[in-house]
Amino acid sequence: MIYKRLFATAAATVVAATALVAGTAAPALAIATCNDMNYTNVRGTTDDFRIAPAYYNSSNWTLTFNCQLRQGNTGEGVEALQRSLRYCYGYGLTLDGIFGTNTRNALVNTQRRVGTAADGIYGPNTRRAMKHASDDFTLSLGCKYID
Image 1 (cartoon, rainbow, N blue to C red):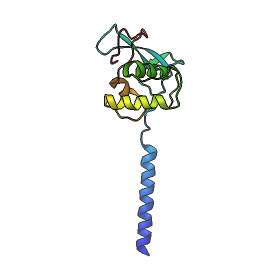
Image 2 (image 1 turned 90 degrees about the horizontal axis):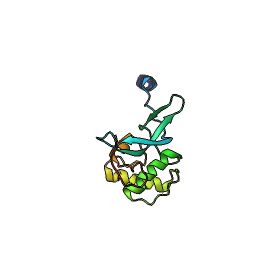
Image 3 (image 1 turned 180 degrees about the vertical axis):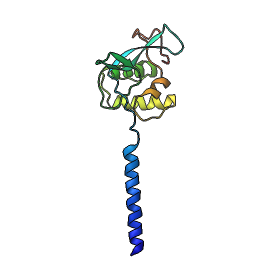
Image 4 (image 1 turned 120 degrees about the vertical axis):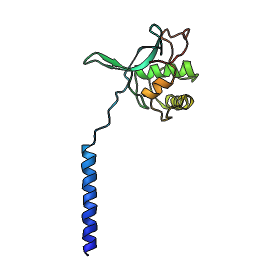
């Protein structure tokens, strides 16, 4: 009987300690959903630009390329991703701004090709690893890596 009480007390202590640690752990940093497309510099240049998914915060007029996209997202950020997947990687995607199954499959395959986690989520690691379409929309400037 005493062993059962000791075990129950020890188990309760472990559960309480786990809850305490979980409750005080720093929350994971949230990353915004890319809601826009914008120009950014090609890696190593100051005057060569590409279109990339971006997050625009209208409340303080800030723009960042550290954002993410996943299946179910819509908008200009998705269209920018689709543009690069179509023109730089050869996928026959419609540039409709809807992150559906075809966009996800194209992204997963591209992630495998560029050596990032093939999770179907576009984020900072995928942004840095893949090439992006030129800003003139004719691809006369080709596809290049961005900052």
